[in-house]
Length: 420
Image (cartoon, rainbow, N blue to C red; front, side):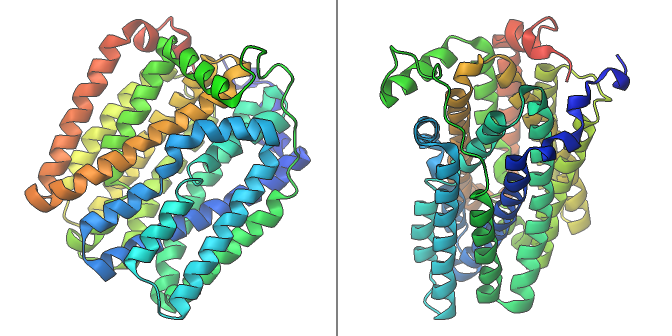
């Protein structure tokens, strides 16, 4: 009942005593910074160069193109090694960032070329988080797993703050080419650090004799999730918030900054950093072990609060007010997504963690669907009405999920509602 009962292995310092984690943590941090800077830079460039919100949401959607093949990445990683896949993908990020750097330097960059390159990188980028979590699970003792995942999430949220502010500030001061030189260097640094991560071979019992091929492995994962109400409910909620909540704090944020708040790249960076700061504060709160929250109930309540805050944000016309609402939205976002991950881990047998983790990434596809639908809606009926439709639909469907999977997700005696 008290914090003194927490085992010593939950101490955050223990994770850094593992050599592989000491390399992975800064590698992940550099990659997260580069991801956030790149998203801000290219999103603002496309909106400024094309003037089209539809093209902006297409770019945002392409960042998550690979979520459809994440389960395949999970199977491939288990077969050839997560370390090899991690540094290979980060070498690819560096290569394409360098290509954009050259195009910018020679004034040959166009929105169409950005979209083409983003489509290629977007096939592998969504699987990066999956590989990070899987490597932590494979290289750290089981007792340290949740603590290490919490540390990883906190650094990811802090990187979003730094990446958003740096991405906007550097391009405003130095220009696109110099800003992309920083992005490229971060990817290169991440590549070399990733080479120091341990390469752990998959356990012999990860793939059963009846599932000897990658296709069979994928089929077994889909069957496993389909017959687990807790996993189905968590997957459905993850898809829902990606489709109806995330677009207003991610893909549409450049449009809001430019057309609602009438601010520049720096203001856009502050808006993105506010959302990330809220997530960081929630992650710190959850990792303190001072709150005893029921995981599944918490994720449902937080999702509802998130949809409500998106609606309030749509009616906000002042930059500082928008920053405050985004701070609150980021807080409840983390209160939703962190318990959601805990629910899925608790309900999944260890032998299926990798494949189920890959399937979880498919829920990200809700974001490009939501973004693609929001672009035409914003242009036809306006931003406020679009936010109202998304928020009302999100609240109704969240309540429906809580009722439909009541015994699995809302019942206080369910395994999904163990205290965080």
